[in-house]
Length: 79
Image 1 (cartoon, helix red, strand yellow):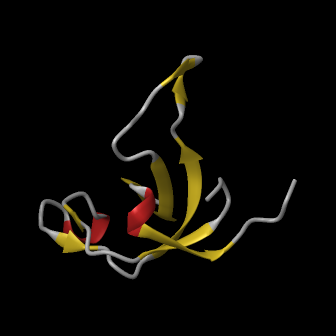
Image 2: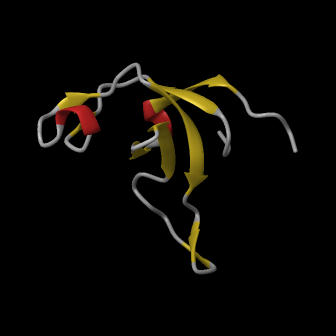
């Protein structure tokens, strides 16, 4: 997986910050979005986050995931 890939949530993931259902549990399984960042360092130092992949779903909704929670739908064009 890399920044720009289109992904789908393949496991049940409950979030409480989904804009249309604030403060209510919402399962985002099956939602599709784009990887906008993969957290591997912070201020030049290597880090090991629990949820390293940041995915943007809608204009106002993004969330962090593990590799095993996502599946690639389409890969971004090589640079």
